[in-house]
Amino acid sequence: MIDLCELAPQYVKTIAPYQPGKPMSELQRELGLSKIVKLASNENPLGPSPLALEAIHRALPDLALYPDGNGFELKTSLAEMHQLELSNIVLGNGSNDVLELIARAFLSPDTEAIYSQYAFAVYPLVTQAVGAKGKVVPAKDYGHDLEAIAQSVSEKTRVVFIANPNNPTGHFIAGDEIKAFLQKIPKNVLVVLDEAYTEYLDDQLTYNAIDWLNHFDNLIVTRSFSKAYGLAGLRVGCGFAHQDVIALINRVRQPFNVNQLALVAAEAALHDKDFLDKTRAINQAGLLQLENACRTFDLSFIPSVGNFLAIKIGDNALEVYQQLLKRGVIVRPIANYHMPNYLRVSVGLPEENSFFIDQLRIVLQH
Ligand SMILES: *Cc1c(COP(=O)(O)O)cnc(C)c1O
Image (cartoon, rainbow, N blue to C red; front, side, top):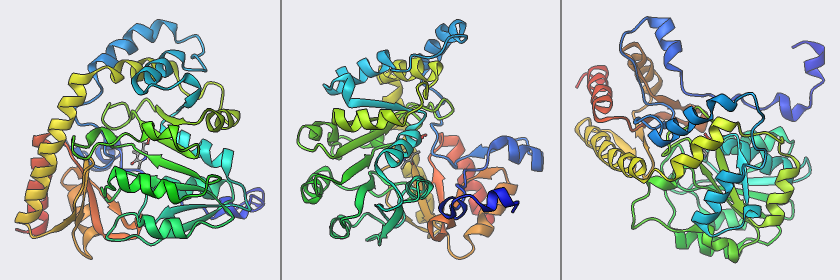
């Protein structure tokens, strides 16, 4: 490492790089395959919401102008939808941006953040990037152990990250359990409830954490437009919290952190009920399709309520991943989550799922 990099903070140098899903264009370049199916990044297989595309077309002529740094229109729609004030909402360049802003606003080198084993990889990244300590609480059956998390809160804890449903496990915690957990957390600890997949929950599981903001000043709920709304490439997400929490986060936010196309597309997608319904239906069918294939192949999996399934392949998981790549299927190895025996497979269109299942059958020689 050149000297100037050597002099960078130790906590930056020790961050493990994020490992994204392999882009289709990269696999195409490497292997020249004609057919590639990517089930690696939990993207919406239906593409973007059509209403979002229309809004983008309308906004194109204005691209010479800076975006609305306050995101007035999108925030107004979100506020109406959730009966909040605009001052309760922060927008991000993806919800990852919101997670990072939370870390920058609330963490520092002498504080700590808590998250579960097998929780979303961005929590350790944003925690370490500001030099704070990450405290990992062992999971229970691949899910968050809320009791243990509550007990591990110390005087140094400023933030607790909870993903519900969690990625990469797909594990879900019932709303009333989360609410009971919030009662146990000291008021000076911010609880981040990351609901990137909440739109996929079926009616019996759905709860409304945004309603709880009335009772918990130390809660922030984050949502994403990358998954069910199909806008991962645009980067837009949001957070809902007490206005003081939002105001503090805004201090460290870039003035124009969300681009104009993302703002108008998200606003339009929010009203695209047909697209959300279709997304949910295709996801439910696809999850079943993947689960049934696992049963046929005698593979166990972690029950998931998201748009992906963590499948236990065995100690040859990386080999299976590579064989699938050669056959044009990109899934996600999750050894970086300390789950080296698993592959995470996103739910695709029925024919994409079938293609994956067919290739897996060949690779496993069933
Ligand atoms: C995909 C994902 C996000 C969303 O990230 P964006 O930055 O909004 O694309 C957030 N949290 C979890 C747990 C996720 O899996």
